[in-house]
Length: 114
Image (cartoon, rainbow, N blue to C red; front, side, top):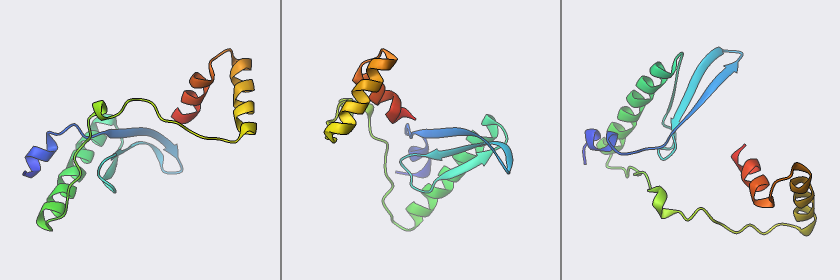
C-alpha cells in the first residue's frame, strides 16, 4: 500500500480542547499510530496538521520498511469484558451506584469514560 491508501483508512482521531499555560488550542492524535500527534488553534487547523503528521509518519515507516498499524473494526469487539476486583471495591461501587440511582454497569461505564 502507498501513503494515499493508508490515508483513506478509518483511523481513530482523538481530539481534546486544551486550555493551559500555552493558551487555548486543540490537541489531537491518531490512536493506532503511536506518536502521531499535532495541535492547532482551531479544529480545522488541527485536522489539517494532524493529516500532515499522519502523512509524514506513514512516509517514514514506508521508507524504512516498518510495519504500519491499520485501524481495527469496531465489529472485532463485543463491548463486554470481565473485571475482577476486591469485594470491598465492589461494595463501594454498588453503594455509589445505588445512591446515584443507576446500575453498577452504568456507573462503571461512566467512570471508565472519564
